[in-house]
Amino acid sequence: MKSFFEEYSRLIGLILLALVFILLFSTPSTFFARSITTIDTELSHASGKEIMVKMKVDLGNNEHMRAFPRHIDGWKGSDYKTDGVQKSLGADVMLMRAYSHPEAYQPVFFLIVQSDNRSSFHPPIICYPALGYTIEEDDKEEIPVHDVSWAAKPIYSTWENRKEERGYFNGTIPSKKLVVSKGSNGKVTERRVVLYFYVKKGISSKDITMIRVSAIAPTEGSYEGTLDLTRAFMGETIPYMFEPKEGQPTMFTLITSNSITGKLAVLLFLSIPLLFIFYPQIRNLKKFLKK
Image 1: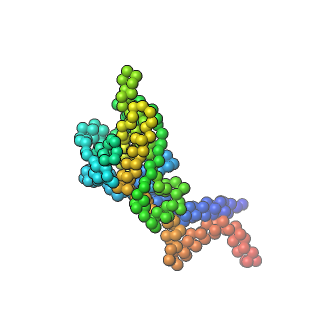
Image 2: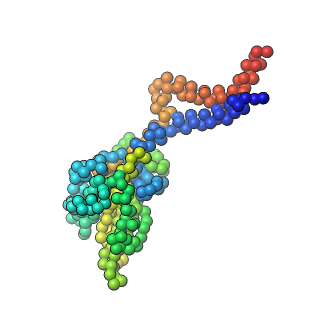
Image 3: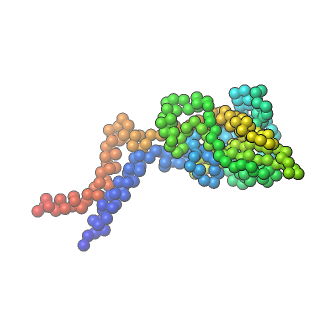
């Protein structure tokens, strides 16, 4: 009667071989997900369109937020007092600023809010109706980032080759879009275009940040001009906060790069499951040789 090991050695070997391949052809971030920061449109789950980024500023630091540039490519910002709003939301950090541009017919309103308390993050789709607005549209929008100096080569060339892969920067940032309005006696008196996204750290962090840009739109007709304005401004702010997370080498590359010891280690890793797979043949061969 075959022992358990003899009967299942091939299956055990195949499982081990699969695990070795997964290990060798994964990146370090696969096993250290807590280090990954992403831009995403969904708060409670991954949208599938998230972008991996590296932070340039600490969005959870009030001093960094106060020092956030007031002059951005012709835009000039002025702060709003946030003490009351920040306290009511239980937010750790908040920046509210209006930016105006001499060539723009109206300002845009910029908001950064961070907290480790999810109750501070009432999604705009809930907040605006609570403030008396009606949601006309709820959609997604891609924000073009024209200043590609933040993704300078050689990192950018790597990302261009991998731009279809999930999590890699392809020249745009995902955001949610809302068109909201309020009025009285059946007449619209105010209309806004809102773009926003979330910045989420790794699974070990409770901190979540929302970044939002909004502007007042015409009460009737097309809002495309306002959408173009908010989209362009948000694209200008991205390089001040983030840079793309460069593509990481696989564990196989890291282990074998310029190292004979590393190559021998890979052979060792592969040989162990192969010994399990071919154990019956090896055992039979040893019996044959003893005869």
